Amino acid sequence: MTPPGYATARAAASKIQSHFASHVGALPGGVAPAVDDIEAIIDVAFWASLKREEGYIPKISLALVAPEAVARPMLFAHPLPLEPQALVRMAPAVERPGIHLGVCRRDGRLEVWGTTRAIPRSSFVLEVAAPGLLVVKHHRGDGGKYINVAVLEGSQIKMIDERASKVPDCPAMLNSLLGFADSGHWNVSVDVLIDLAVSMRAHGRGGIILVVPAGQDTWAESVVHPMSYAVLPPYRALTDLMARADTDRGERAWEEELEDTVNAIAGLTAVDGATILNDRCELLAFGAKISRRKGWAVVEQTALTEPIEGNVAAHVTTSQLGGTRHLSSAQFVHDQRDSLAMVASQDGRFTIFAWSPSENRVHAHRVESLLL
Image 1 (cartoon, rainbow, N blue to C red):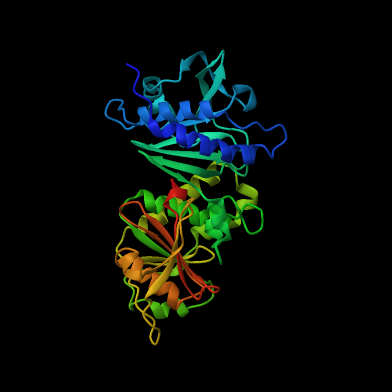
Image 2 (image 1 turned 60 degrees about the horizontal axis):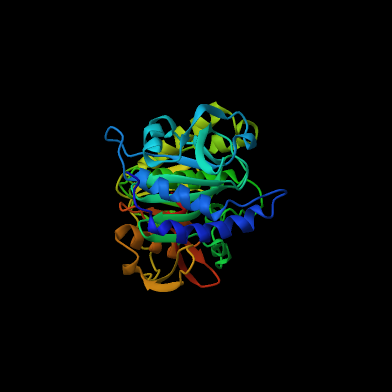
């Protein structure tokens, strides 16, 4: 039986098409996807996300692109209909990162023509992240990175607001997540922090990463001593990998080593307390207990923003941010103003804390919608 239409698909499709029209229209020969095609893919993916294949939740990535536009596509001899059950059956074969089911319109109907690992810049991509949770992305054309465009969960539509990069003193990490970089080029240190954020969020236990300036030790005034899990000498595996990025980036061995190292360090954040890295990504400690710096005031308010269209910046009390992790991280950044704090909650929320000189206060950036 054909399921009823996903009511949110039409409203979301119009907004998403406007985004792609503004981005793809700026590219030579670029053509934005049609509203009807976007709506149909969202509708089918939503119903597929609610099904199970041998008890497993389907994880699918759909790319709206013709096979002629990609390098080395794997073509099905008989294209599949774009239907929920067909996607669920294919899910086990394409659940690994970087594999997309290719979709295009042939003879008036949308069909799944095969799989691809490479897609053109600004192509429409939809990922099934969880039951009823869909993420629309576009390819930004630098090293396989994608930019989130919208998050759909049930009847809720969250459109990512690119203007959030204009928030005063916007952290480089948020700029990169939104598709902007301070230098306009790929930034390995920022992208490693993003990889760490995704990995620590994935383990689901919650955690804190504090990023402090290399060559300084004032951060030690904001943690309890002795630290149970200090690392001496500092663990430099990530630092060494970053140093090889210019020559080894794109090599499978380097990519796998980076992923393994990121996951190992992110795993440390599951230990109660904070994991401490310097801005060269040298690991200094984990399980550290944060304390208020001697002589510094208790932080009482922070600015709070989320890069979602319609979001209104607010000044909130620290108790409104969350639990102990959020309170202690806000205090740390208040006392160590050249530091950054990344906080994952067990419920999936993710917050970046940074000091804003222009606001003269700690600024909390809610970014979980950018990490899906």
